[in-house]
Amino acid sequence: MAKKDYYEILGISKNASQDEIKKAFRKLAHQHHPDKGGGNEEKFKEINEAYQVLSDTQKREQYDQFGTTFEGGAGAGGAHWQDFAQGGPFGGFRANVDFNDIGDLFGDMFGFGSARGRRGHKRKEGRDLEIDTAIEFMDAVRGVTKRITLEKLQECESCRGSGSEGKGGVKTCSTCGGAGVVEQAQRTFFGTFTSQSVCPACHGEGSVIEKPCSKCRGEGRALKEHAFEVTIPPGVAEGTTLRMEGKGEAGVRGAAAGNLFITVHVKPDSRFRREHDDVHSDASITLPQAVLGDSIRVPTVDGQVDVKIPAGTQSATVIRLKGKGIPHLESAGRGDHLLHITVAVPTRVNRKQRELYEALAKEEE
Ligand SMILES: [Zn+2]
Ligand SMILES: [Zn+2]
Image 1 (spheres, rainbow, N blue to C red):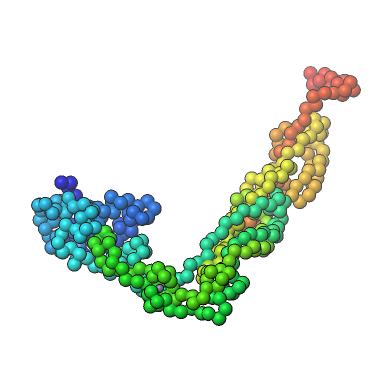
Image 2: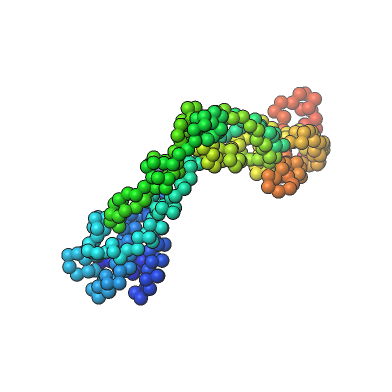
């Protein structure tokens, strides 16, 4: 029989109060519930087992007296999860479990929550939609208004979203009598007991449509093409996602619509490279330009600008053009333009040039 320290499992001291035990259990059960991401079924069972014993004054006394395991066949230390599901190893343990408490705790996880949580269950909301759009490099710099067309569930024109055909309205659901919930016997980790669940006939709404709209079959929404314009702000970067609230799928019969997420892709530009809000580009100068200095015209996002090349410019020099980059998306100001200079060494020279280079070479001896 495995030895288990229930106090250690719940992370509490040997003289913890009932309140502390309950608190520790709630916290850990939430954390390790197997239905949750990162949940751990074994751990969850262990936590529950510890709680079942320590929350019961009588069993706790017994447990404290006999150490980390119970004596006898029905020992809690060796109890398996299945035992609990089938009523537990302790004859009357269920009588001591605060079901309201557990209902609150696990209602959302198991879907057998209390009536108050389910009454007037909301109609199904519209889903979020995600689309992609591609824009030109320069549109990302200046901002652009883009026309987008997509097919999505929208309010049904035929019934104006009510879901009813003609004058027929809604009537109280006969399955649940309008409560939106039905009583059900549920088998759970804590044994079998009566619970309430969402009415399958009306999906918790408490009412049903007398004569559903033939176009949308009572949903109040239908698939339709939707064209709209979206303003893409200046400075938007590759992969930026814009959120348009309520522009997703329409909800069922007027329930809240989802949101629309638009991910912007920026097409490359042959002249420019972007790094954060800085623009990089290359320029090639001749040997005489590098030695003597000059002024060259280069493209920037603001158009052609004249850039002074100082005398004695080395290859791989980077000239920074302040404020000629991309507007910051979330603040004032702009990035810079960084011009990467390459000095082009001629691979072929004519006779005249050769003579000049030879003369230059002599001069430098
Ligand atoms: Zn309709
Ligand atoms: Zn119903």
